[in-house]
Image 1 (cartoon, rainbow, N blue to C red):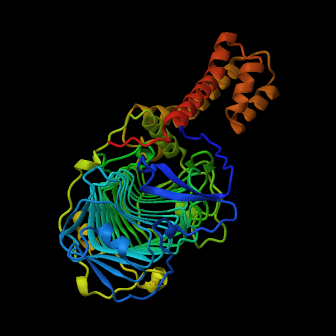
Image 2: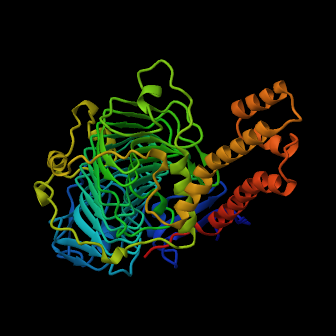
Length: 579
């Protein structure tokens, strides 16, 4: 279905009917983003499909089910398990796709680097947990899935620890419509969407801690998520964009809100060789990008080497136009940004504030002075329009599939990652209260150990002096075209109309001095509008064809640009184009 299309399904009787999302499930509807539509007042138990009715448990049952010594496959062990059981997987490459509907189980590898679920670019997910609360997955690797490495959907309570997910076709580590969870000590790379994703939850009550995400479209993406959601002490590098909380209409619970990003190292997110989808391409070259988000906190991060912006707050365009409000950006170290270290983008914003950041460039200028977090009044001000228009040009370019992208199957293979302490002998505890069990203390959060090394190895470059005139990258015809027509052309029109009008007034002998001064005052104090009125109806001596071309030509150009943009975005940007 094209983006924006709707369909109506009528159920003629009560019952439970299977459902699957064609974008996130296999074509047979058995694996991926699957679920049930419950019609009427009928009993429903998601475990009933396997003939089981489970209750969540908070403690280890004492039963360990070993793969492959007792069960030939991981799926066999999962199907046999009861809540509270441990599934312990020995070293090996497992060519399967695992679906979990039993709550409160722990799936653990004996070695993070040697227990591998390989999708062979044929199967959808490594491990998918569907409506099963409290499931723990730890100490293993998932690779080469056509969709996701590790995936929880529709759960309360989840934990992923010491996981490696690489070269998967959508997301690496993915929690959707799920709450009360922790993803920690994990690594994700080579995904066309995001390495790690928390989406469609409020309040999420989720923590991402000590994770590394690289060579993805987005290091982190959080669509319509927030509420006690924390990204802490993690590394986001070599992606198209580092960290990108965002609002979209195509998922439930908009807007994105109340995410805290603190103590992260974010650098070199300019990777055009990463796999990328059309929707993500306009985010290129930004460290932290908040798109249509509300009441987020960005503190004590180190953000280095980005071709567009270090930290940027901007509106997001989907079916609606979502403006970012009340976001707090303070005490960050930001440098080597191509356009601005800190930036506020868009026609209007309220409540966004910037204070205590170590930076060199900002757009608009004096951003911390006019929108300081400790000031009594934060000005409701517009932001830099050039970035918004340049990104719009990239969206139009991407809507036609015209953008560079690496192939997720060919992204760099990560080296060995740190194993879980105590491995097989580590304590077993279901994840029903993973968020509370983490005992989060924001005052004790520290930057990743790699930070000091990166700060020493990446010297500070001279700051950009061209500001809003700087073209949005990647530089190509589309962003240049939109930057020129949408941002620079109004200035050119202002200069042209004003100068032509004033020169004409100077030479007119049919007006007395007072009328001339009145026109000069109007043209000066009410720019563009007064000039247009004067040229079309103020008795200017220029030929009519010249005046009409001069005034109406600009409006025609803008109208055609608007029509072309709308058609392009409606036809293309909603689909994913993956190399």
